[in-house]
Length: 176
Image 1 (tube, rainbow, N blue to C red):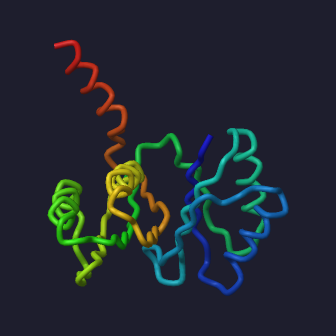
Image 2 (image 1 turned 45 degrees about the vertical axis):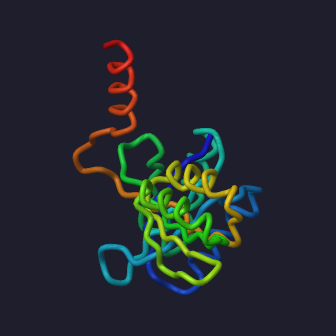
């Protein structure tokens, strides 16, 4: 199972290297990694996506706390949260295909951030599922390059689980 870990660290040289080393020594791959400043100066938030069962993730969490400069580790996989990614997609866009590509971009609320005679670069933010969906639709138009940030996430203060709401609303729609 994929787990989302949110780790607050002191902004010191080598912290990320020690975390990556811990995961490598234990044979774990970090599928997604995003690092940036947190709400307080001198503190960074690291969001990681890793595979493992609950017991394994609990052990990794304990090991992370043993590293210096680690302030807080949370497995937020099952906690209502807001998740986002940013992706840039460079597409070969002939004049004939350009309007179709722009229609897809419009539906997904993607922005055109660069345009040339034969290429477009789209910028899109959203949940990881949105990224996969637009990528699948644009595959037939010759994607040249993709750059993704990796997932970032914050716990919802409202505790509203939007995934559960979506499932509930879908069931009600089919019942009606």
